[in-house]
Length: 141
Image 1 (cartoon, rainbow, N blue to C red):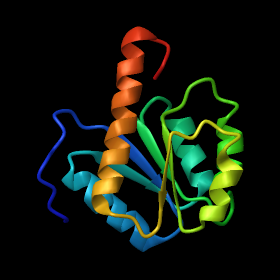
Image 2 (cartoon, rainbow, N blue to C red):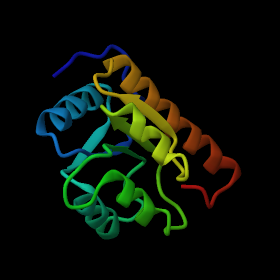
Image 3 (cartoon, rainbow, N blue to C red):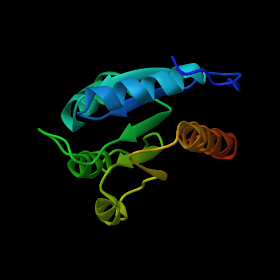
């Protein structure tokens, strides 16, 4: 585990969607050290299956773009049909692909390699923004 000094007072459940086992392991280690619970999916289809089975369970999604079976872009297109979904943070090694995500409701971007502090700050910021919005707009999850 990677030690992180500041822990959250309340944990959030984050879904990591990446085909690289080592990336999932690293992101999981960092987020769990920061106080979050983490689930993993190895591609967009596995992530959609989890979201369908556990709607409203995740407070954030960290999404790679280049994956087999169902890519991150295909995942975003499918997710766009849902009325509400958690903040999505793109995590990619290919900066050029970020431009292709602008048509979707993406909340944040990180490029590989990333700094652990940037990962934690981005996830916490997006979760806090969504939580604050839900106080004023209860239909926002």
